[in-house]
Amino acid sequence: MRTDREHADAQDAMDELRAWHDRFVLPHDVTGRELVYLCGHSLGAQPVLAAEYVEEVMRDWRSLAVDGHFEATHPWTTYHERFAPALARLVGASPNEVVAMNSLTANLHLMLVSFYRPTGSRTALLIEKHAFPSDRYAAESQVRCHGLDPARDLIEISPRDGEDLLRTEDVLALLDREGHRIATIVLPGVQYLTGQVLDLRSITAAGRDAGCRVGWNLAHSIGNVEVDLHAAGADFAVWCHYKYLNGGPGAVGGAFVHERHARDATLPRFAGWWGHDKATRFLMGPNFEPIPGAEGWQLSNPPMLAMAPLAASLEHFDAVGLPALRRKSVALTGYMEGLIRCRLDGRVRIVTPAQPAARGAALSLRLVASRDRARSAFDGLRRRGIVADWREPDIVRAAPVPFYNRFIDVWRFVDALCAEIDDMGR
Ligand SMILES: Cc1ncc(COP(=O)(O)O)c(C=O)c1O
Image (cartoon, rainbow, N blue to C red; front, side, top):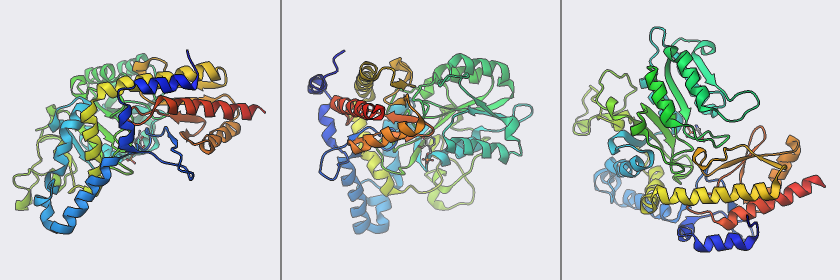
């Protein structure tokens, strides 16, 4: 493989999506030089169009005040509805199965209230051992809320000793063994620390065969890899919009509820007026009648200023389409992997799976050095204009995002990593 800088430039010149880079605002250093931003797996870059859409809400608020709810350019009472078709395409659902609302952890709780109903001997909640802390806190607190003991009823599946990645066969074997006592499964579509894509289809099928409810956390999947929630038969899913969806810091989250639950009046849920039937919501009656579908889980009238940037980003996703983005993503990440293997073999270990289908944009790396030296090499990257991230205890994550990253960004990252690791050895 060619490792020279000119090759990176040549690939950028051939990239059909290269013009999209300029539709995003990338951070700069104090000298005005654009940083190599490889942190879209944490906080996506700002679409240029986002400021216009936020200003549209500000303007309507100034000129219309309360009338903006019905008369704004995009009326606020129905603002979130315009997201549903695009979100549905991203997660493989129909529009009435998805909704943008609340935040990820809040949505996980709302979903678990409805879909984690321990009964009889089926009382356990299955998550992964290395779940994102918020997911674990949510799961454990849900188990406790039912008066159960997490030591028994929170099952955490982990990779085998000495391995970093979960094996599908191990998840399936656990479901075979323990499925009869598992009420609900919540697993990540893409694992946040390793970047591993889990086999959503087989795990969902096995979970449902075992009589469990199956939910997915798509925080690191949506806008990154193709997902087909409806066809897989998942019961529910949750995600955030601030990573690959570029919705801005603390952007509203999202949720999916499979349509077989859309009209199930027996499902318990925590209700709020925004989930109430739209035709009668403003009659202000005392009895809750849920909107059929995912919208029925909404609680409050949505935060318009936090929704507006997402409108911009989803327009971009619709314009390009996930398949084209994914094609470039596979090429970018493959290029990063190839450069690391050629230039840093034996000094950096790639934790993320090697098969493109088993990973998204991000690679998780372990620098083969003591933790302190690895940490200081990571800090050095920042001084060289690279924005990646560090996840305890010893992982560097870097995600080239197809919308705004270029092959030259990947080249600069690996070149800077080589320089830091060379310095570490001196
Ligand atoms: C996998 C995962 N779960 C949960 C969260 C928490 O999200 P929020 O703060 O939006 O609830 C994050 C945030 O990065 C995440 O990556």
